[in-house]
Length: 119
Image (tube, rainbow, N blue to C red; front, side, top):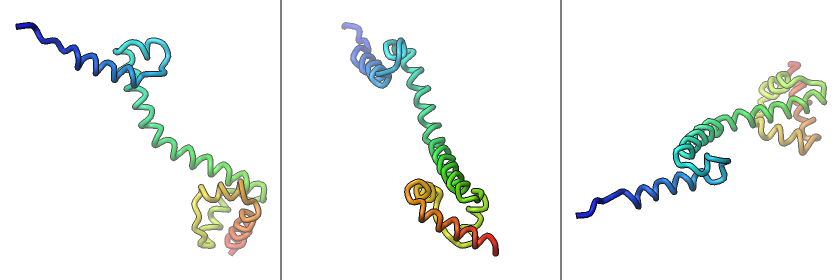
């Protein structure tokens, strides 16, 4: 009886690894062992950065809001505190968008925060 070897499954498994490593540079896209390591590393980075992305965007929004507040002679912290005291519930993403696209509406919010902060 002929000896059975794992030809088809082995080839399929290795092809799957190399397909996943398509576009990688050098040996990382050609050799199965290094490709497997590269895929594992890429997966770890992707997992980490899906969480990191949320932090990065929040930092960007806060930076934009802060810059718009500084243009109105107000600090970011006083602005947020004033909005909280005025009971204005609006998230930082929307505030950032407003600061960039609708400066007049943002100025109204700054005035609201300024008047609420004084009381």
